[in-house]
Image 1 (cartoon, helix red, strand yellow):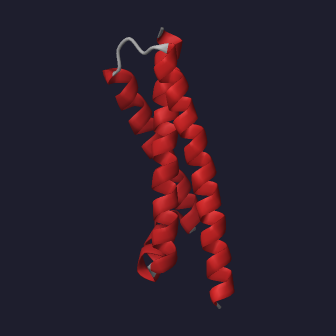
Image 2 (spheres, rainbow, N blue to C red):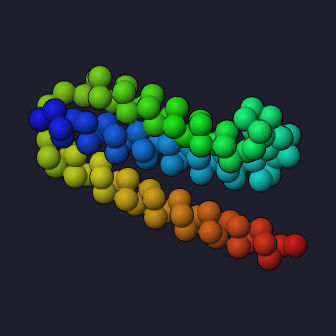
Length: 105
């Protein structure tokens, strides 16, 4: 059961970090001051996003692991399926956003 709990927590943390990274990527493209602030933290906005993504993943994974008890195989499977869907949606969303951004000018 400990492995299921770890998989569940990790999948949930990964999904949270994907959503977070997707959101700040779009926000940074619409706000030059925000993008500049991200760059000022580590030297480049993508490096800062990566650091923040890692922090979100670790925090959420640890939190979910610490509060979850008796995770079933079905719940673990559902969390991995949500993660897979999140990855696909975020990838398609970013590709569509940057394609739109490219064709706008």
